[in-house]
Length: 178
Picture 1 (cartoon, rainbow, N blue to C red):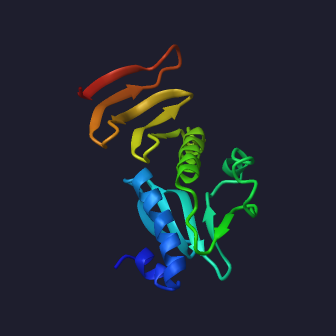
Picture 2 (tube, rainbow, N blue to C red; picture 1 turned 90 degrees about the horizontal axis):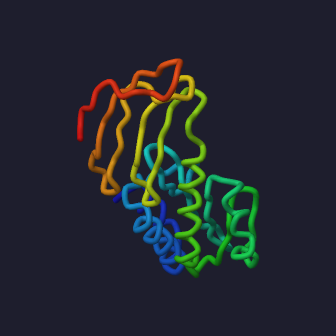
């Protein structure tokens, strides 16, 4: 039994079914995501980055997209739902609509991608299924060090080592994988 399975046993059968339906949609949309308990709730993470959480309460269930911006992008579709700064509430015994949940997940992955590169130079990009697409580092806005690109299924597409220069675009210094 996983920690999320254990967490869901706290709820009555109808509410548990609704939460498990949400979990199944998230699992099928983000098949490589890690299922963890974070902030006391079931959460899906890709490469250590929280994408979405969910949980049940006495009178409702909630999604936690770990974003203030993503729910705003769905104002019209979420008009009938109670929302707080960090959550979207839905009925305690009815699952959240799968097509809308999938669109929210894709928007959340796009938002995560837009957060890179970090100030430290760290760069990551994810496919919409949560699989890492590319990882590397930037120095002075140029690729530097080892960069790896992945296929949608997680296999390595290629690895290249770059040396940042002060003039022009970075040039690869070695090619490890075709």
